[in-house]
Structures are given as structure tokens and as C-alpha cells.
Length: 75
Image (cartoon, rainbow, N blue to C red; front, top):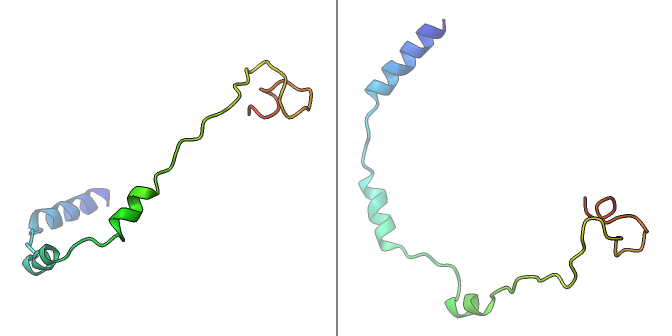
């Protein structure tokens, strides 16, 4: 059964034809991408978030639980 399915799929693949869609290509050439005002996009740049405090794995957790950071908020 599997061999017959493989043979049938191979037959369809060999008979497949690639068609060129000239009408679609003509429409794409005439259009322009519209994504809003370019000036507004330049103004909306995000700045990366920088941590103010580095906590080691075995240091006490800054939340005040008394646990090590790796067992509290480090997970």
C-alpha cells in the first residue's frame, strides 16, 4: 500500500507543470508598499532596557524573601 502511494505521488510530481502568472506580476509592478509616514517611523526608535543591578546566583534575593536569588526570582 505504501509503495503504491509513493508511486502515485511520484507520478503526480513528474506531471506537474510550472505556470507563469504574468497578470499577477504586472499588478505587483504597479503597486507600492504603504506602511505609513516614514518620518513618524524614524522618531519611534526604542532604547534598550539596561539593568541597574546585577545580582549573583548565590546572593540574597533583592525582593527581601531571604532566599538565594537562584531559588527565588532567578528561576
